[in-house]
Length: 77
Image 1 (tube, rainbow, N blue to C red):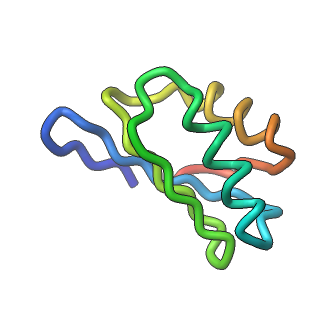
Image 2 (image 1 turned 135 degrees about the horizontal axis):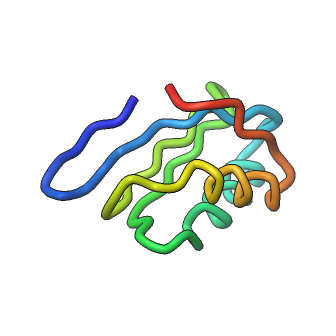
């Protein structure tokens, strides 16, 4: 799911392997480092990671950030 609002883009990704708050923080921290990202909210219970950015993100960059955190990006919702 991708929605554009006030020149910002919200994209929801599915990430596997998150089980707790520490996992959420690790994933959010890595994705926050991508240029243009303004907000990241990760939910271990659902595996959903909501990213707000100034422009559409390169999925490869998001995948690399999630990999760096030790988890797996399985796609966009």
